[in-house]
Amino acid sequence: MPPGDLDRALCGLEVPTDPNLIVGLERADDAGVYKITENLAIIQTVDFFTPVVDDPYWFGQIAAANAMSDVYAMGGFPKTAMNLVGFPVKEMDLAILRQILKGGLDKMREAGVVLVGGHSVEDSELKYGLSVTGFVHPDRVLTKKNLRVGDRLILTKPLGTGIINTAIKGGLASGQVIEAVTRLMATLNRDAAAAMANYPVHACTDVTGFGLLGHLGEMVVDSGTSVSLVAERIPIIAGTLELAGMGLVPAGAYKNREFRVPMVRFSKSVDPVLQDILFDPQTSGGLLICVQGDRATDLVHVLNEKGIRDAAIIGEVISEPKEVIVVR
Image (cartoon, rainbow, N blue to C red; front, side, top):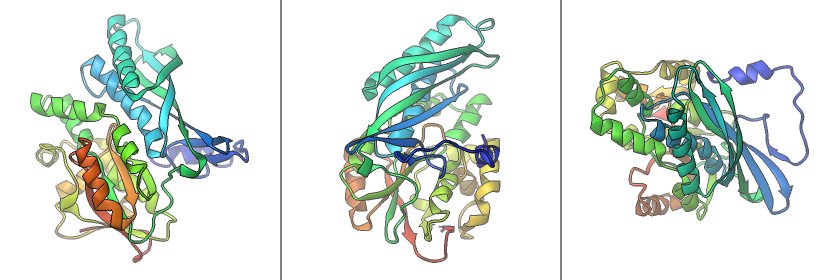
């Protein structure tokens, strides 16, 4: 759904609330958070989509990893999940669905998540995802809205999945690129979340459908601060620049640009092709971590040691100008 559409649909409707609701619809965040006790809150999120790769088993893994990512971004860890399935039962063999579900189950098992149920409907288009519940201490909830001047921004996965998936659909991606992006999308953000839990992280989100600049825009709006990015430090999946230069940019990237470009200031030195990549909608992208400036280098070192080799400091939070994203 394009940015802001759900908010506009809900405009004027009375949404139920509760004093124990820590994060709800009053702000654009990755998941809802509800306080259970003084020491426990639950994180709730849901996500599903159509296949981004041809292999049903890998699609199941990717969809599951993507759905669980919002829990990690909020500072928690997923515990239970429910399957969401739309399946064209008259057109597709159930063996395909079985492979999708197996992929999802294997990814849940890797994350330590228990499948507790689900819901399926007959649909003209195949869809799969999860409704996920996670745990977090109420005092350790991370949201998008706590940027502090001097903080550094760390991105844990390279960009380009939307562009590469477009190339895959057009038969223009090599087998090597397909394998690399498939494994990247199926990688959990669990280890990154575990690492950042030991550092003074002030805000966090995961980079998905709105692209890097779209999700960063959500962090900057109403923050009273701005962000400065160094374009050459932003990790990009190998081959993405070439594919984007061929025009293989998904429609979602243009929608993301249209929505957020008024608050973005590009230096003349930033390649227009790279600009497209910064708006590229990601599937199961990395965490965008806002951490205290003097601890950022150490956190990147720990992330790299955990095998998150693309993790990098890509920018910092600045005081002026107000509420813009500067890319230089």
